Length: 121
Image (cartoon, rainbow, N blue to C red; front, side, top):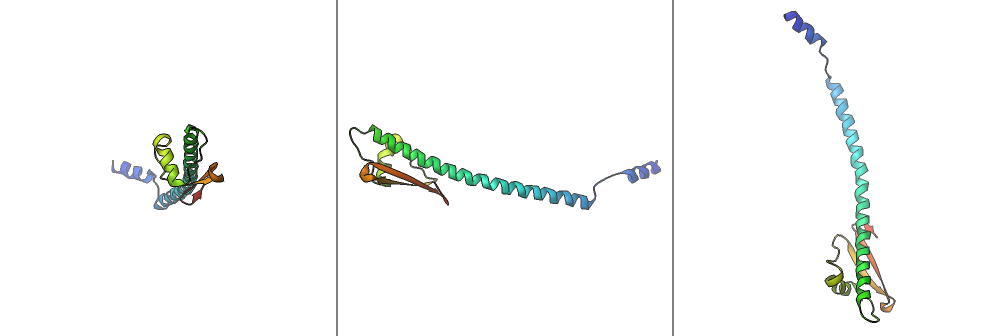
């Protein structure tokens, strides 16, 4: 009986410490590659959010102007745009993006720019 146990122990196979360390190193390299690949995805997300915020403000100002009777000029600046469009056409001014509204053409047009972190849209 004792000889069978000794025989079974001789035939046991297992991983050596070196083999386990090599597997851990390979998994670490794969994890690093995944982390670097995902980093670029968040940058695209910030830029897309910035563009969406700018477009939201543009649409709200256009809707406000279309709702005004007669010939109307666009709001003069960011503060005036907030006062004009938030009550009926925009729930709240975007906070994740710094949105700047500027009147152009003596009140006949406007531009909206946005900055989200380092991304300008």
